[in-house]
Picture 1 (cartoon, rainbow, N blue to C red):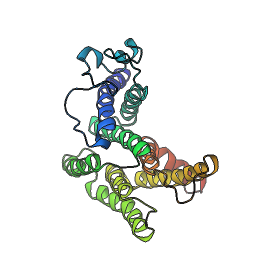
Picture 2: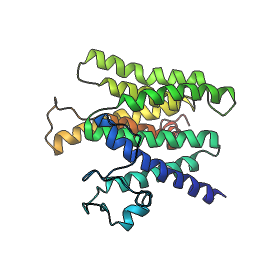
Picture 3: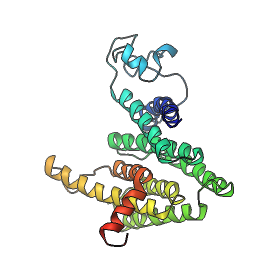
Length: 259
């Protein structure tokens, strides 16, 4: 039964990942995410048989049926990565009430990270609706006894976003408002599970961002004033925290002698 559950989540992850490829491609350009998929090279509408996640890409050898031009493998990789994240959410949470929204959260983190890495933006078109839907969701989940603590979720949102907001005001250009909004989304998503989840997300995200900046400066000779997208590191922190916060927290407490 557990294997079947993971497979089902992975299959839905492939479908959601296919949708995310559209989101990642269109949202940064202000295009609608509705309508049929199109070839990014020739604009031909992708037929239904050519739009099956992973399978169609492999059968077509990564090329458009209409023009024959290669299609970036990032579409395939996004679908596979989303399937893996969905399966990981199913393996982490026994309750569907936690596994399903957890899987969607992980998928959104992937999409936001990809967009910010390529376009240097954390799109409001994703963050604002997600925040609104999540705020309603955590309240309903708390009322229905689904294992989510709504007050703690909102505390988590403030605890993560407020310090980054202070940095954004205190150091102009040092922190984008998109990163602040992303931190609010992560804090709200994880706070309902426990504030330790938020602490792990912040630790991994901020430390990872710092290390990433140092590596970029050393390896690619980026200047101190050159902006490096912080969103992918915040998103990675959210993913790590959702999937492994209890283990990470336990290991840390044992290391400092409090476990």
